[in-house]
Length: 325
Length: 256
Ligand SMILES: Cc1cc2nc3c(=O)[nH]c(=O)nc-3n(C[C@H](O)[C@H](O)[C@H](O)COP(=O)(O)OP(=O)(O)OC[C@H]3O[C@@H](n4cnc5c(N)ncnc54)[C@H](O)[C@@H]3O)c2cc1C
Ligand SMILES: Nc1ncnc2c1ncn2[C@@H]1O[C@H](COP(=O)(O)O)[C@@H](O)[C@H]1O
Image (cartoon, rainbow over all chains, first blue to last red; front, side, top):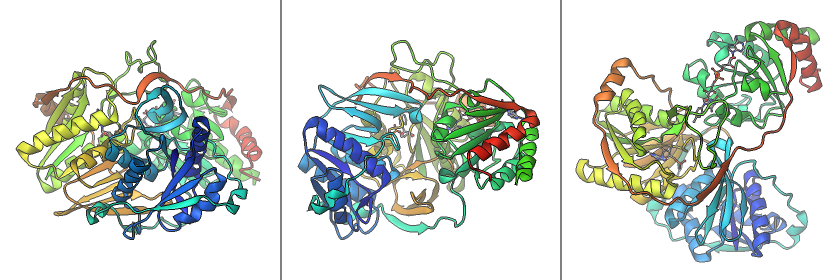
């Protein structure tokens, strides 16, 4: 059996869980084994319909009245108990922070290795996995040993297959599982929440990102970037040099240890294009580089480039955009 | 307050990664070495907590002899003590790494008493396995919060904040002793001072020698992902390029 960890909204698997399901379904077909899913939380059982459409035969729901909110130790322990009872060939989690954390707990409890950020898995003698290294700037092919293979799927590395709605007519069988938990297992849980600031364009979702790097030169130098971002309805993103210098907050950093962006256009000004920066900008549909160095990696990887000093190029672009309106 | 921070020595790659001919490793002949930005922030956090509340901070790494450079960098910004779990430089997987860190913690705690807090990076820069912290916490039966971008240590509890998937923050209040993995952004690390560097150079480093361990999953080879070929269109030089930039904005539907 192949077992997939699902995160859901009232039963409906989210995008990253759908990616895990897609890999799970392929693996179930390749090994000729049934596909099962496991989920926790309110409305988990409501997933039985849509999950059937994704090829899931059985949905295991983790049931405990104390699991009213996210509690990684307790849920991880419950998942580990389910896995030790069911002994699947492989367990697959999605690329969210929570799925990765829960799978780490499963690995820790079972003592099994966990291959994080996988992009492909090939059953056989031995099983092989391709996984991301260096935030995705390298790939590693590795042998996946052990009786139960634990994996997480790198976010957005697998195109999620559509779930056929026909499945809803014959939902997956729901099997509630009551884990053996103590009150102590719930010592790690969300104790409060702070809501997001309203009305701000999130860097991860912005359609246009105006990026600034060391070439901007100072905190004040960002005025032109802010202005262009506002004109285009976008937001500002920066390189690590900028956040380390304290010119801009880390929340605006693009890259391996910052935010991964996916805009229609990334206007990268005075950024060299180090690999740790580029892994965060890989999903940009187009890049416009503004740089004094024609050979900078950002320029050679861009769709469009302007060669020159950003402090003379940006004011010209801003007035040209104003005139064009 | 006793705090342990775990850091990992990794090559500081820049514009492009070159692999060794056998495809087993990054060619580091022309590279410097560093630690993950997350771990730099974990080091800074430990230094700040001890500055504010007193106590001792210790940095630990599992790696080759050369990893003493990274231990000294941490001591240069204010960490008090250092411990090297010395390997022959081979790959260590997450299970074995966590196991060796746990053994070292137990041995140290038997002498000095418990670490109130063990800090790690959310993920290492090279492997990005996202699991050593949780494995250490589970083995020690201590509560763990991962991905913290805010941390407050109280007398009996640790309060950690992390970003929620939907925006905003999740707050976790957990009992001490605890394990917390940190993300860049929790603080702005200081730069080492010259006296700091001099002091760090003279400090003792405690060493434990480890036997080689087989890695699982076991590496077959590394490869650089194939990049989309993009032929860059140079729109021009300097401010004269502005009209062509506006054309591009129009083509992409960004302006009417
Ligand atoms: C493990 C690890 C994780 C990392 N994570 C991240 C991350 O998440 N995000 C990140 O950004 N970095 C990250 N880094 C750092 C990264 O390696 C680079 O150091 C950083 O991205 C470089 O920033 P930069 O491009 O602004 O600076 P530089 O590399 O110094 O580039 C400056 C560029 O500006 C150009 N320029 C200078 N003046 C002008 C001007 N007047 N007009 C136009 N162009 C000009 C130059 O030609 C050059 O191309 C990480 C590093 C490591 C080791
Ligand atoms: N070799 C090592 N030595 C010390 N700490 C390590 C080592 N490997 C991993 N860690 C710690 O564990 C964190 C998570 O690593 P990983 O699970 O491999 O992504 C890192 O950010 C470090 O803080």
